Image 1 (cartoon, rainbow, N blue to C red):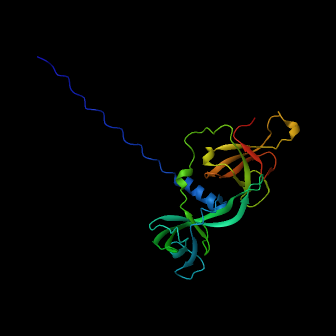
Image 2: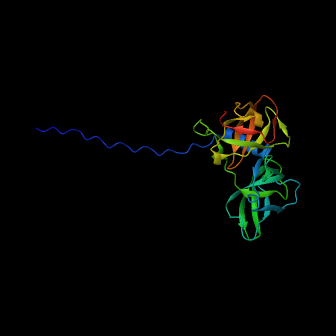
Image 3: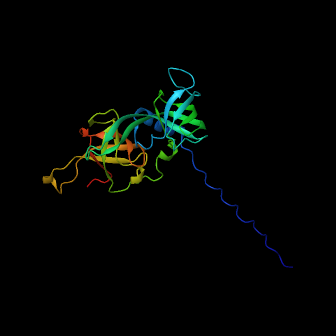
Length: 248
């Protein structure tokens, strides 16, 4: 009598990997950094709208309040979309070249558009991190989830950039200070990456190893710039100081 071997069922398909949501504590730190220290923003980013009036005449604009946003006629906001609210501060120029880099801005909160016309949109205020006023600007919603620590710990070798500005406008910086770099995600940087600050060399010191005068850790990288914190400082760090991933 022929004995039939039991047929094993096919292996169950492996479940699709679901994206891991960014921990709330990290999201809070990112929001706190962007609302307290700020970030560098391009003029085109905040040129999409300005909070021009509100439904109720209050001293402060708060969560759940209806506001009106003036927009360029050719680019109205979109209904059912969330946007970030920012305040624009000083213009930032590259300390080495003098070239305009952008503006220092701080994030204040967000709003959701409920009605949109060519030059005026109606929106409801959502989360509020800092005081919002008439005249504050609207930009595309800041996606905090894209800025968490990278999966890999390695940092690209050979990266070179410069200190653009201090979060409070100082020219000299030390341990604990927050500053802005002219490098970001386009250069492979992610939250938690550590870079070395090196001293300038004179022409007579060609061939001499770089002198490390401090270290900075990336807090929030954007495409072309980053918010960073000075974690070590062996002497004062000036605007325009060189920052590298590989010390030579």
